[in-house]
Image: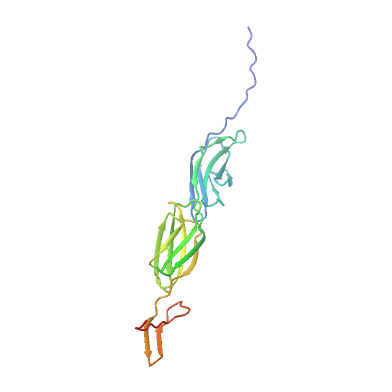
Amino acid sequence: SCDTAESASITKKTASCIPQNLGVQLDCNTNDAAVSWTHTNGAMSYSASAEGSDGHAVSCDTVNTQCQIANLHCGQMYNLTLTALDNVCDTSQSSISDFSTAPCAPQFTDTSLNCVTKSTTVTWEESDGALWYITTAEGQDGHVTLCNTTETSCEFTDLHCSQTYLITVKAMDGHCQSVNTSTFETETVPCPPQNVQADIDTVTAFVTWEPSNLTVSYTATAEGSDG
């Protein structure tokens, strides 16, 4: 009997293992994401890809076990996948990891002043990614008041009269606040004139008072007992 000649041996490399322990750390101030993972056997390099709910896609390639994904859009949910590359099979993707970016800044803010109730209402458009909003009013005299709401408006009823207030609206999501805030100024109702005095002679009344801050003009009205 004869044994067949032994064939030549060949070596085949299997696909790299699936990346594990994929993690994401979002910088709320820049909306950049730091992605990390543990080393994968057989991998020569990695490619991390993120796709937002608005269709925006961005990626980073590295030979290390971490990379930075920059220029993410605000107020979006991103799907993150990590692919291990080995120059043979580039299909060893990790399970998908979801993360959300910081909410967008409120836009088109406006104020309306109610001269009867002396209240100021601040309104804005809904921000992507926002769960609630914090509106801050800071007066020239140092008075500060806050309004927290899930709506797109806040009514301030305790603002001081004759003041210019700096209004700031921030969008919140429980982890981050909006990268940029909407800031503008508004004026409150004028304070009533103080120390009003009248010198009256036979047919003429000379009225004086202390001026109120931010008041443009005054109207003095005299009403007699006969109506």
